[in-house]
Length: 472
Image (cartoon, rainbow, N blue to C red):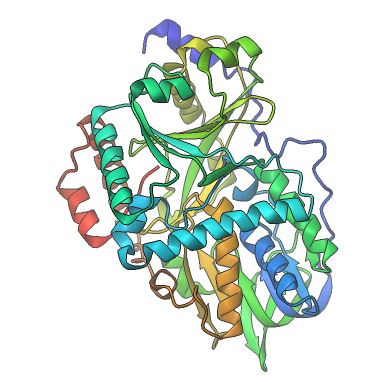
């Protein structure tokens, strides 16, 4: 990039606040007090992100008399649930292509369950009056290179063969630029119904209030330190007390699971995003975007981008940074070199927005697993259930995961627990230094693939055969 453009990208970041735009809200609710002493309950939920909040809410909806406690190590929604892009997708399989490759025999059921799940989220937002700017906008996967356009065509044709194209439309260059105008777009695949956009922190805070309204007892700044069986139930130790529960649901995701054997199945990756200042009417008109869809490009190292309720552009993705040993660190939450790279890419995509500044820049860790979509299981003779590995699609899929965990704790068979997706596990990641080396080689290979017409080298082909994956 030319030095002048480089200076412009850097200058656009000069006033960016190093905090998630969504969490930088004067209406943020006050935290609940920490647990002190001992508590007893029917169900203990560990984790105050979407996974835990949906589990607590659905548990009370299923059985209003059930005594439910939720503990959160910091504050509800402070981690991935309060800093993601706000893409709430129907897909439970991290997109149609991943679902086709992994569970072709039950894909129709997974698609049906995913659509029902998204409809249920929309209904819950309305029922509980959750203020989260929910918009059923749909999404466009855009192609910026010829090989990406061919891959989108292949996905569309495979979806048509399976009968999943009633809400999909393949867009040529003129059609995609009529929706959102970027000189880099050469085509796209529009999903009209499968994605909603929302304010992610608003959803978390609204679910918290809904849980409290149903009688869930929530303790914030209360980390679960360890898990042990006690009599016919379980005990979780916290900094200032303990919780004794008949059943426990773990919604800790990127944080180390209290069931230690689950830990090798996930690794943390750091994702970063920028938010612009609100666009003027003229700036918005220069890029179109009248239908407000979410967008993502089709590279291995991809960007996701969307409009906020006040017409800011969120621009995130591309870099996916894995820390050696999978160690979480607050220092990794901000990465100026990635912010600068994202700003450069933003103005390359939308040169007509030259002069726009970014108001916020932030990052943080999410969990990923080798199959890109959630996995589930139980421990301690069925008294503990867990779900993890959502890989960036947890805004919607965590509600489905909450239903799965409650089904597993109930012990009966359901249409969810009979799924191969639910009964199987991804391949675990190897120990260090092999995980670091393998992820590093994979990231390098994916970048080479993006620069080389989508050609996948021998390493990526081997990973494909093993069912392993890692991307941004």
